Length: 51
Image (cartoon, rainbow, N blue to C red):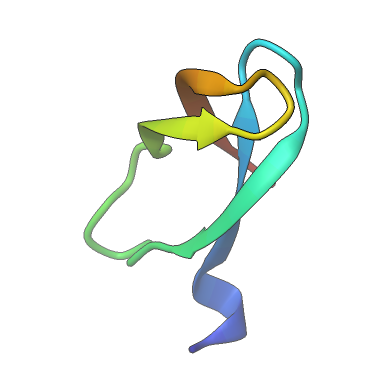
């Protein structure tokens, strides 16, 4: 896994960083947004990519 493609995913509700994933920055110009399970909120919430 290439280090430069690694991005953090943060919960919109509680602002905790729960996931790390990869993204092809040449093909995907916009930031990632996914509905993922947040362990702190204990429900599925929107997670957005941060730096």
